[in-house]
Every structure is written in structure tokens, then in C-alpha cells.
Image 1 (cartoon, rainbow over the protein chains, first blue to last red):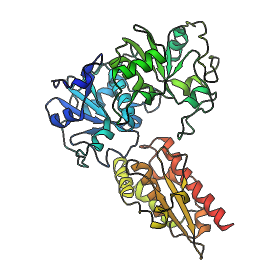
Image 2 (image 1 turned 30 degrees about the horizontal axis):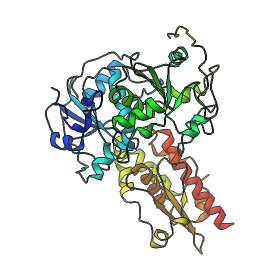
Image 3 (image 1 turned 90 degrees about the horizontal axis):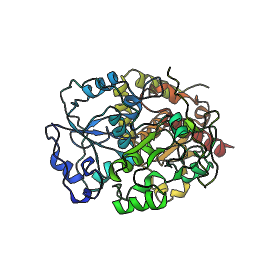
Length: 307
Length: 142
């Protein structure tokens, strides 16, 4: 059974306030029936080094990505994973993590590929919980495994493939990488070498809005007014737009996808997880170098090859 | 490339364990990374940033009069994997003769059995630390 929403006035202004919980709310609801708390970090040891009591770990690298194919789990594999984490289909799942919930947003996006209804983020993530001096533990609590149903992944509403991007030209794209990656000066983000691409630059017409601009110093999401200034006034998005966000492998852009979809309320927003590591190495797709977005080429519609 | 016994025993310590226990062992190393001595606390400028690591980590290498190597690392608690790697390198290499450290296999981090649990990018970070240690030794023994 889902757990009641966080009624915090801080969230009321967002399009979907029900997808956020505050640290106060989580502290008060830890252990509630129907609530599963998951930690999703970049650093594989961070959870073991201390986590929110009752939280279970979910690992983007070993658990959410497919072992062999560059893809996510199948419906069967996701069901097995969530069963092993003790999650039921109607549970409320609250995810939190390091780096302003960057990896938590990524996990949330993958849960949404499988249509898990009630997934929320802890606003401010791991860093805010710690900054407030709240309890961390190294103890893992035992829990009962569940029988999560096999649900086929439904990519199309929130996931864009390369050919979807080629057909999307004329509609807005948001590049959430650093300015140096956008201009083509770098093919990887600062401090993350060797996860690059063969060409540097960006997808033609994409507006540059580095993902972390959507977060405050304390790692919470910015206010609605600030987010509107960033994505509507500066990046030029308009209500009702059909938007695709991308980064390097689709994790930073999950954060932006979350902001556009749930906080600003864009109904049609997709994450292109192939992102620059695919586009920047793909044969025959257009790119733009430098700090200007560049003009959108004519959309290319081609049937996707089904293997 | 020849590995000293300290590295061979680390490789078997890690590989004798299941994947989850390998992470627990890495966390133990992370917890036990020696603190910086005061002379570096007061002089962070002497430390070298390892740019290839995703989390800020600094290292410094000393080669003493009898050509033995001493290693010093600084990494935040919120970067336990990076701290763990630094601590493993400390365990494996601290106190060894410079020529022994220079002869260590550059790819030994891949043999710890952690690649199944840690993304390839992070393993690169550990190799980069080793490369910088060797470079500093060469500069200091030249």
C-alpha cells in the first residue's frame, strides 16, 4: 500500500509535488508499512560506509544496466531484482543518493520505464540528510523478498533512441553536460576521462543547460520560479513542448528529465540515454561545434531497425 | 613486470572472497587509510591531485635515504571507493624499495576481482594513482 504524500508547502508549487519527500518526512516515516527506501550512488561503497536506517542499496552499474547489451534490464530481470529488494508493485519507493540525487534520478527513471507508480526522490538526497546531522548506520535490516510481477519495459513515453532524435529536429533538445563538453573542447566531463566519444560538440539546435543548475547549494531542487527562469526564459522551452534531454550516457539527463517532467510539468519529455557517447561516435549524424546551438537540420524519419 | 609478495597476497585476499565480501574488504581498507602527517596537513600545496579520479584525491610520494618509498594520501570520507583504492596501494607498496615499486605490474588493479562490482572508469582511477606514484618515484630518484 502506498504511503501518504509529503504535504510540505515547499513542494506545493511544483506540477507534481507527490514525487518529492523532505528529510523531515522521511525521518518521520522510516519503517512505515508499504515504504521502501533505496540508496542509489555513483560510489559503489558509499552505501556500505553508512546509509539511512532501513535503506537498501540499488546499484546502477551492476543491477540496472544490462550485463552484455547496452540497455536496461528486461521485464523478467527487473521483476527478479525488485523481488530480491523486497519491493512490491504497489509500494512507495523513495530513492536518494549522492551528487544531488544524480544517480537517484537515474534509478527513478529506470523504475518508470517499468511503470512503477509511486517512486519519489528525497529532496536534497544523501548530502542534505548528512548535513542535517541525521542518523546513518552500517547495519542492514533483514526484509522479506517479494513477488514483483513481470512488467514489460515501455520505453517510448520517456526514452529516446538515436533515430527518435533524428526525427525530433525542429523540437527542443536540452544538452545537460558541462559547457566544455557542449562546445566540443572536451569529449568527457571534467574528472571523468575515457568515457568519451570520437567527436566533440553537441546535437544541432540543442540548448545548453548544465544539469546541476537545477539544484541549490544544499542539493535540493530549485524553486519553481528559478526553474522557469532557467528552462523557459533562458533555454526557450514553451509550455506543451516535446523535449529530449541528453548528456553522456543518460544519467545526468535523468536529473533534468525529472525536473522537466515532474517539477515543471512537461508531459512529453524523453531522456536520450545513448547520449553523447553514442551520438558523438555515430557515423553520419550531424553535430555542431562551439558554444552556439546551431540550426536544426531537417528531421530524418527512418524506420527503426528491429533486430 | 614482477609483483612483490604484498601484491600477490592482496590479489588472493580479494579473489578468495565473494563479490559482496570483496566490497566489504575494500571498505575496511577505506576506513583504515592512514591520516596525513602534519607536515602535509599544513602544506596541501605539496600534494598532487589525481585528475583521473572522479573524487578529489591527493597523493604524495617520499623516497627516503635508503631508497624506500613512503606514500601519503588524502581523500574525503564521502569518496569511500577512492579511499579504498588509495589504502590498498598503501598496503601493497608503502615501505618497499623504489625499484620494486617501479617494477609493479601497471594492471594489477584489474586482478583484484573488483571489476565485476566497480565500473571500469573507477578502476582506471586506481591505475592512474599507481602511474602517478611511479612517476613521482622516477622524478625523485633521477
